[in-house]
Image (cartoon, rainbow, N blue to C red; front, side):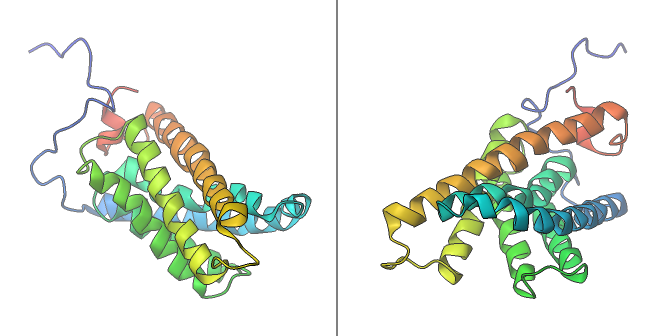
Length: 211
């Protein structure tokens, strides 16, 4: 039988094959590798943020623009592996590797990795892990950005006279979500599609759909 002239796109892939939710060895390995790779990226980004954050001191909430990188592993893993738990697994591994490499934030970074991963997971859950196009990438990035914003604001910037809602809280949340959308959502999906074009993702649905 001849193959269809047009293979389904990312956005059109809506049905899961039987057993698709079960994790394979390759799913575990690739998700872990993504986590380790992004853990190294976190370490480098922490060094960059120390320098890049200083010019933003004139308006501290805008530093939320630097947060998007930390939300990438969860969204990228979710888009690539397409299994429940992938976003949380990759994000937590990335945080753990960052800690081992000397994260300046200490052990709390593990909590952040877990929460950020669960935030991204929520975006995929809302689509029932059936769609992995632009809409889902942006949605997962938004929910991931909101998750880390809530944790930041709860632990470090509670609403007070020093951090009033309209002056600090809202701009910080908007900056973080925007950063997450651009880096975790847009760049994340472009990264997955670029990898798919190389043939490196042939073992995954992400590598067998038209990009």
